Amino acid sequence: MADEAYRAVFLRVHPTGKMVLSLTIDSDGNEPRYAALVAKELGVPALDVKVIPADTARFGVGHGFNTSPSEGISGAISSAGEKIRGKARLLAGAALDASPETLTWANGAWVAGDGGDPAQVKTVEDIALYAHGTGALPPGVEGGLDAQTVYRD
Image (cartoon, rainbow, N blue to C red; front, side):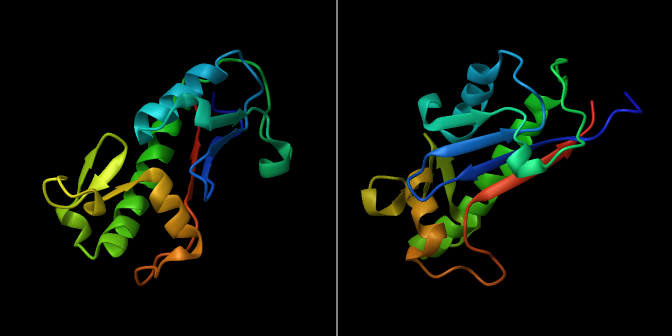
């Protein structure tokens, strides 16, 4: 609706690889589905994704918190996941000493070469730890692994 506030999702990957998906919408009973969307996007178990509806600690108040279904939330979650994967690709390139463009995404990991060498595979969990200070960051890339998508239904 035109008079409705923007909504947002914020996805953070902790150094352990566990994730938190913060939402501006109140609980609508679809939290397991939202966790499954993140899991599918990033190749992790859905149980590794904690969903926090109406996360006023993250977003503050005034975002039109409500329980009405959000038509755009699936796309917003997918967008946040794509942003995470994009940054993870840059970090995996640095960690693997490979050009990010040469890496392929398979089974929740960025892979250099044919993937036959386990040392040439970086999972989301590996990259999350790397992003939080265990490796050198590529130029222009900030530490941490998180993404926000703002949308309007």
